[in-house]
Length: 121
Image (cartoon, rainbow, N blue to C red; front, side, top):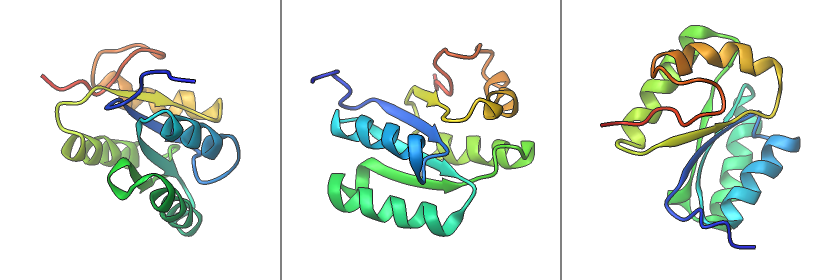
């Protein structure tokens, strides 16, 4: 399947295992660049290392972040903006509870849930 995701950027929460990891792997298979977010740093680092070996170091990045912590989300936003400057990032959440917590991240860009976020001028 070709979804034409080359040079597209995605942020996937809960990405160190389970559904989140499966989503990240599917996006990588389609050529996307993927940022993985998860609370557990050790598991996240292991997942990032495995995916980098398979899909390339430049296409995979990991951010250990607790999405229930609004200050951590603001820091995450700054890190994403620095690394993926001038890119539009699509957010994919693997857990429903994170939708409520991620709103503070999205509010900073005046976007509604399900829309593109973190678009730089």
